[in-house]
Length: 103
Image: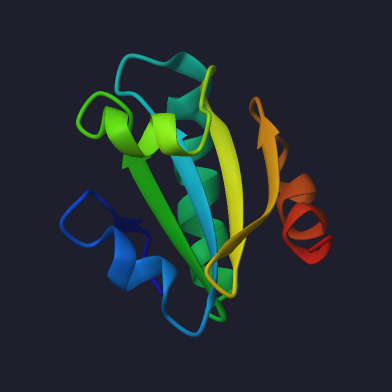
């Protein structure tokens, strides 16, 4: 499954689905965010049971504020429509699956 680009128009639809959702809050100018992009694509392809979503904080600052995003990249794990975990900063690929599994 490909990474889903999320905004105000499709946010509720994505997080209220039956899947666990891993959200990547990012900005186009953010170096660590750019380094995470191919890792998120790979994770989405290798874990079709997890919906991987990206939210650009500059396009949707309300969503960033709603989730308390103060630094980017920030990763939020949504399970059953609720926040299950949150972490800030770039990760190695090997850290993504344990982060998702913790909730």
